[in-house]
Length: 491
Ligand SMILES: [Zn+2]
Image 1: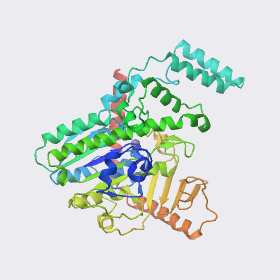
Image 2: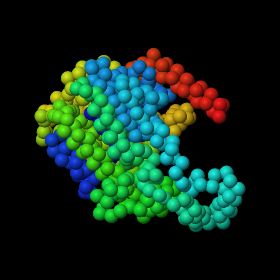
Image 3: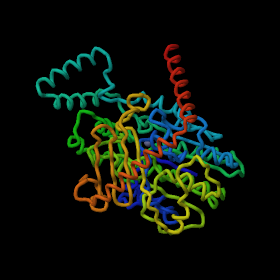
């Protein structure tokens, strides 16, 4: 069973030392599981991270044009299905994890809940969307321009935001405001599916979106975490405030802690629902044989380096370091090495645990023996994405400069590969908050070693490119584009 939680940072989980009680169930489970101290994503956000989790290959291995999995690509799900497993996926309305991007491959049952998102999106109210192109909107833009010309832009933005909040329809409930189905809905469906497959071995994938922005946790989870209720109107106010593009980090900082509480309550809800799922597996005696891996596709920023959410413009730890808990029946209390474990190795490791042979297409290798016997490994984790690509549907956005990170147990090199390349080197040992990017003052051989790893990675990418797979992915994208245009014409 694979549980992926969107936007879940490792350092916001109790079993990684977080001070708030976000994960009481998983903390208890962690004591009988392997907890990887430094699990590192291969890319961020979702569309750069998941190809590696499922297909054990780097996100840009097929070229920057390909988003998601290619048609016919071998994945954890296709391998397990061929090995006789019943395969079921329940993914909480993340459009980048849909059949459009190949994520249904290998699953007998696949539910992506995207109809849920379409319905809820209408409930969103924001200063950007409210007045639209109406006469009021045009008037507003004219006043905005005049205010800025008079040097009153900030005052105007503040007043306008407050005005939008005032005229927004009353927020009825957190459930109505939520953009994604909450974890309980997915767990209910997963339980029905499990009840339908009889005694077959199963591979269940759950992708939960509760900690993803906008942050609208169930009130129950908020109360469990803070001892108070959250009023829907206030939750909306905080989310809309946090989403403002007119504020600098210092203008946002005053609301940071309250926003983090909402995010944390989303984690608490995930924890509780995983607990409920495990409880039902116990009742049906399936838990005794169940391997569970829990991880995230990337983390989330809360102004640590000035940013919010998870745009691929930085590869700081709050974005790239995720939880990785692996529960294998019969193993407990093992000391896992502090070596960074790239998601590249996750699928082969899980197959090894299950006794299923990894396909040759997988680029990672099993670290199961290392994890079991506490043997460190020294290959660094590579992270890559298109710099600033927040909309992979746009070709120009996809072809942005490559942002490449190389992280070993202590150092991290981050490079933006373009003319006049930007490069930063962090010493995570002495500067865990990554406040002092420094190339000077660190041993030159450190930089050399990491640069060499980056170069080898780039060479492998070019020499290992699968032309047939690339072609299939391009044809799929072309078909989707044409169908999309026909649909627009018909409307
Ligand atoms: Zn994501």
